[in-house]
Image 1 (cartoon, rainbow, N blue to C red):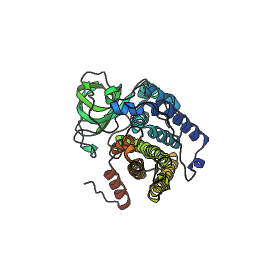
Image 2: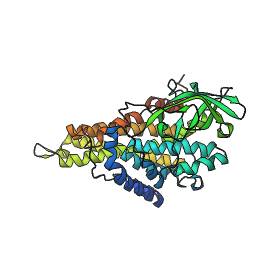
Image 3: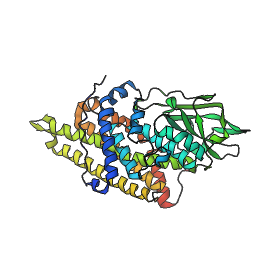
Image 4: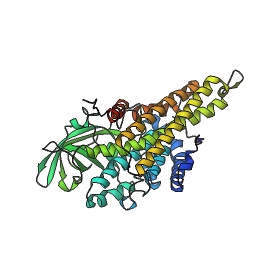
Length: 395
């Protein structure tokens, strides 16, 4: 089992993107960075090896403002802007993609739809407890047979007087086995997609854990199974009908991933740079060899491009101008960048790169999932293709 170790990470900012951040951004980033170094890094390898979720971190995530940083304070959020949300996700994923997922799901996929589409009563009932970490939430969209095509969902609700009867199943749901509530998307009797807040204690609701994951091992993932679950009508999100509801939530989460993946890349680069200066072969540090320098130079170049892409996207988001297609481009580019950097960093570490003494393989395995969830690598490519040509290649 991996032993607790000191986090030696140093931030890298080749183009001084720091100057583009305001004081609130820097304070939020530093608070999260300090928390990750103290609470996440010493234990994350152990939890990942055990394939166990460090559930005690939910309270800490709430305390550092990681749940809904850009949602209003009165609804349990942080009252900050979208760039603050981004830098927080970057610092969390620098620690581990699974920890960032815990926060992303809670803020972007549970709190956000309740805030955006919920009634005032729903907001007051659920958001403060979600923001404080008292409640844990999950997001039910993906189904066993409907991933990239959510419009094909078969989970459904039928009118039953003062309630709806919910039947169906969802798959690959972060946090579901430990969640207190789920924001679930289902088709009504007219075939229209509706959002519902479903509490885990209700009869007919179960959330079995998915075992055997070789990626995101410190994040708990499960199914959602609904067998004649009676959902009161006051738990239907009143302000949205159709696929635009869940897709707007995904845009919020994908935005966070575009920032978060940079954190994983930075951790791999930082470890590789340090190792290249310490590891000697042929009488000198391997960082002195041309091929190692090529790897490191290309790594920091790609990270810098991703940092600028994320910052510009954040600026557009703050102005309400960031389009779903722009978010798709950043998510796809930055996650792919991080995965490539993890692979190059593994090579620089040589054989040590496959051990849990270094974070490389854990990041690499995690990023294989991040490449696929919240829209696969190929789907995001087609979103960009459709945006630039006006032609739909999905059908």
